[in-house]
Structures are given as structure tokens and as C-alpha cells.
Image 1 (cartoon, rainbow, N blue to C red):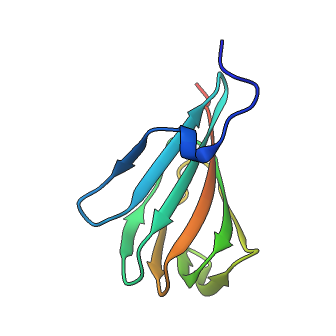
Image 2 (image 1 turned 135 degrees about the vertical axis):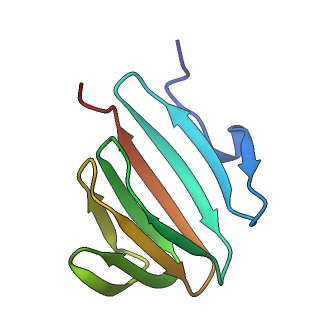
Length: 105
């Protein structure tokens, strides 16, 4: 059983070669992931087999989807249905919270 109360700083951090840092809280049907993206990083177009919501806590950049390119900043929320491609450019250091729902089978 997982703790009912936790802190992001208590979660193990993984850092990719490009400096993107992640801390995750797994659940039975969804997971939360805190992501810190350094300024100047670009995420190439990709999709997931699961639905995803992303809350922007701090930072700014440009989101690209089939609906075009749109700027984002703190307070923005992204919603990606399963299979929806998306890409992003991060202009400033950006802190995100991803909610990843279990893939539908």
C-alpha cells in the first residue's frame, strides 16, 4: 500500500541526458509525474497509448498539435486523448504535472 500523503521531494528523481528531471507517483489506474524541463529544450512530436493531462505550474513555451501552435504559460492545461500527437518548445524552465491515465484495452 502506498502512503496517503507524500511530497515530491520524497520521490526518487530521474534526470535524462538533456536535463529533464522527473519524479513519479504511480497509482492503480493513473500516475502523476512532476517534470522540470530546462529552458531551450524541445520535445519532438510524439503520442502515447494512454490519455494524458498536463498542468503547467511555472514556465512558458509553445505547444504544437494537429490544432496548430499555441503559446503556453503557468496556469495552462493540456489534454491529449490516447494517440494524439503533440510537440513542445520550452522557452523558460518549465514545471509540469502530468496525469497519465491507464491505457484502455
